[in-house]
Image (cartoon, rainbow, N blue to C red; front, side, top):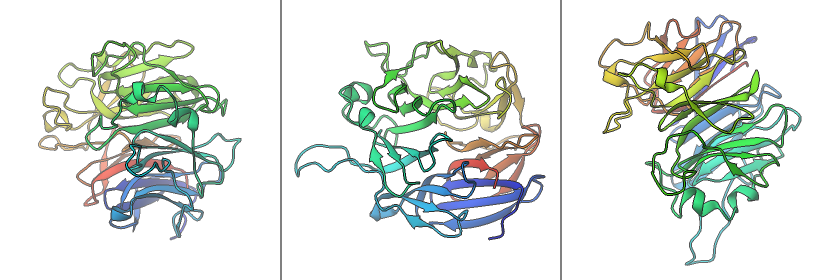
Length: 377
């Protein structure tokens, strides 16, 4: 596999393997490589920005179960983790958590070479310090006495099990972490995961239980790299923004067109402008079909931190296009003019090389897309 440098790589996890698209910085032509792990579900594939060559892939290998793979040569070769994330075994007949899959991967702080975090289903948080070879539980989260209150006794709040996602490391402080639980809410730790507080004030709730800090379901949360005190959230109940040190989210999705609404799964931000973010709305009506409203897909962009939103659909199908885009399946690169990418459950990868003004399908007939990441490699 020839390396294109400088250039952009788009890493695509699907129901039947992983694919890597590469282009030069112009992003006019793309070369598709793959599949890797053909036939296995790849929930997430991520490049380590600290070395620009190490990839981790969260793979569910059919009847062999969940595992992780690592490549140190941009996907030319892969090696399975010696000890992937796993909940402790319990005595026969006893009830305990069994890991169904690793759902989310996040590289650690720039100062902590080899550290990664993984969010799983059921909701669990794991950490490696050797680049992904062996993983240990973050016991302050997994063994918290509040766990049952956070998530309930059964981790089945989403159709295929609860997810721990949006694992975020503050670029200023390796001890400062955030995670999102679907369901369960959003959490913050200031001591590398030893203790956690819930951070859900201001968000509408999915489940109207007695405790106002329960019943929350964030879909995707992004910390802005250029302004780390700003977070954007695509929630089950709308689009929100949080500016620390405030602990109260503001629903900025109310500015979306009423016919479209502010319900969706993915969210991504401009790498340098804290006021610019993108979402991909879905039909949030009573039956929740999880498709583009009216079959007319569009990305929506804000350039004023959510005060207003503009529709970006040039090049996308005008009608009868019932796209579903999952929470991990939208990403932005860091080129001078930012490129955007999203993948659909019908196996298409769409790209814009002009910050969403125009779109083109750069790969089709892939399996159901679970995740999309953009990286310079």
